[in-house]
Image 1: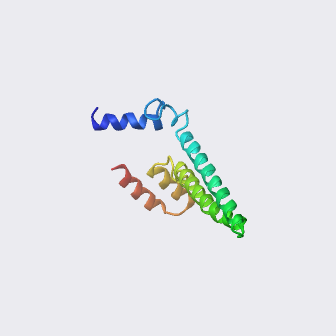
Image 2 (image 1 turned 45 degrees about the vertical axis):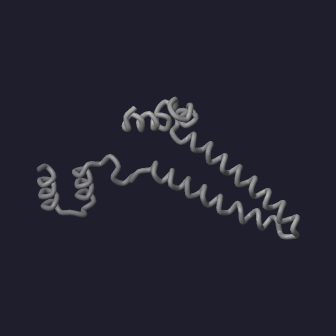
Image 3 (image 1 turned 90 degrees about the vertical axis):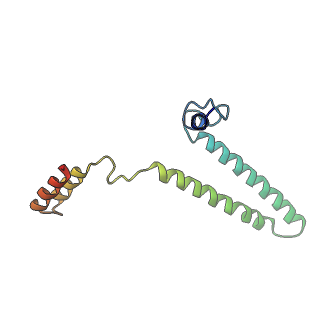
Length: 128
C-alpha cells in the first residue's frame, strides 16, 4: 500500500464509515464519538488515581480531600480545554459566513458606511 492510500485508509475510520483501523470504534456516525469514549476513560482513570491518593493521604494523617481535589482540578481543566477547542472549531465566523464580497459591500452601503461613489467604484473593482 502506498503512503497516500495508507493515510486515506487510516483516516477512513475517523471520518468515514469507521471500518478501517480501529475496528469501527472511531466512527459510529459522528466523527468525535470515539474521542468522547476516550475522554470518559481518562476521566475514570483520573478519578481512580484521585481515590488512591485520597486513601494514601488519609493513611499518612494528611487531608485526603485536599489531595484528591489537587488531582482532579487539572483534569477538569484539561477536559475544559479539549471541549473548548472542539466547540470553537465547529463554529465558524458567523458574521461573514456564506457572504460574498459584493454582499458585504451592499450591506456597508445600506448601513451608510460608504457613499454611492465609493460603492460604485468598489463594485466595479470587484467585477474585474
